[in-house]
Image (cartoon, rainbow, N blue to C red; front, side, top):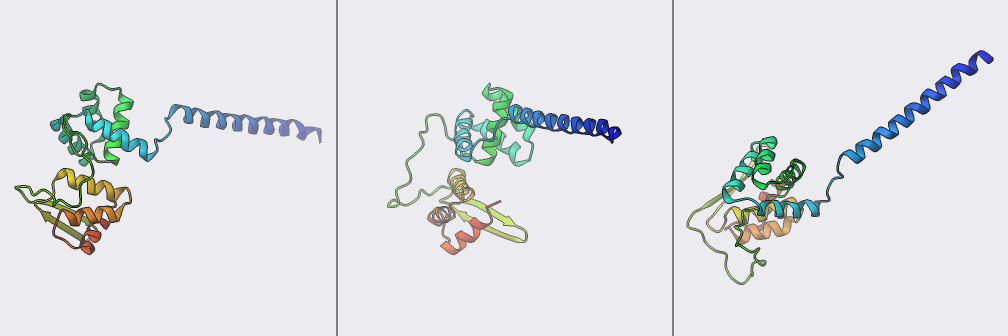
Length: 188
């Protein structure tokens, strides 16, 4: 019986050491990595980050994000904003998660559009295309532009499908049913 006591004590000591090491490692990982920002904070961060970009920088940054070149997008934001690397990474992640239309510095965020006045007509036709699998939908209208479509996509991605569909029907000549089908393809 005495011969089993020493191996048992060694086994208990090893188990305690492993448990303490695992606990210390998990605490270290939590303190090293920043906690994830809530969606409301990252949407606000995206607005602030977009405000620091010129029109050309905004276009180049979103082109890099669309091409999946996250590191290049972070580098570009780092160079133009003058912020640190971690702040640039967080800003690019927020901009990717919450797309922002370009707003010139003098442009103040406008109030929600008045439903009584008709939407502005642009001298060009804007084409918005959404697809998922084999299903593709297209909306073409001279009442849409990047900014309006960006707002519609933001509404759709935030889960406000009805508001997105209403805005899409308001700025195009499609029915509410067609708008809902189009918006359903944007949720990815």
